[in-house]
Length: 428
Image 1 (cartoon, one colour):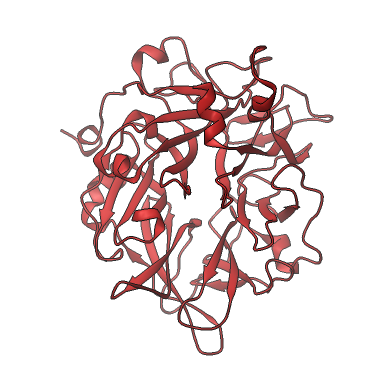
Image 2: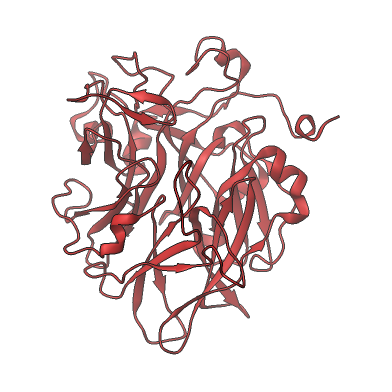
């Protein structure tokens, strides 16, 4: 049996309920109609993609995204009303943001050992794009004033670095504050991958003068290289147990081969070692998982849906001959124990329809070029999630642009949705 056949499983359908929030049925109660609406963060005649968001201390939401598929100038939008509108941008962004080469990710750093307050960290990779030069490495920008001003990009482990060089993709797909002796310390574990589906971790620390230090990247899934390569593991999310304060770390990994469902692995030693990866149920199969803890102790996980069930594939597909199709931008609700035990969880949400080329109305099958969400959760449990995609059958004003799905004639948008699960559950 070849390696690639060894790590292949039959596709199955999920059995938990899924609520479609694409369009409100006529009998939807007025107080719940907002669940079917979205706010436009940005739109354009070109391609906008891959947002990430951070909740600011004053309650504003900062959303960052590239003007292009992965690569492209880092753009910003600010919401002052909980994700209902996004009228403002960062004033005077760093000049180096104009040359961003990859999907931006943004995180809050909460210092526990130093009296430095919080800082925001923006990370952007420098992978190899076809027919284009690159410096390599990953670039970092810091803000010490809640996103008002930012440092210019500083690049780590670029080409020619005598210690290590890399061409990272989606750094940092997750960033997790670490513990020592049961207490949080000023160290953060970042994850990324390179072509060939080699997954790395690197530890962020700061010197006494506040300068960033990233440890030499290490292959944390190397003991499971057969699985990692055949399943094509990438864009891994990391979740800390017990509402984000516990002693376990759990990985949710995209399996890009689409021959096996997304993977899960657990560490009880702060990411030094990991359990053998296992397949998650179909309800969680997808790409670029982003997980947030809710005040009630549940998890809200967004991702790009990947469906592999053979029966559903007979009538639903993005392209004939594919062994999968997408239902688009979805979210999963369940518990940490569900993830760890491989249970399906409680329910799923289709957050909004992303249109395929010939679609004029929402359908089961959706454009899979979506997901990569920016998620924030307010203390009262209100969720604001942002994604990118073709959220309307509206045509572009001029010409076409190229995506990984081919030539596109419809507008892409960055949109956000507000949700309260207590409202969602009235409709289930």
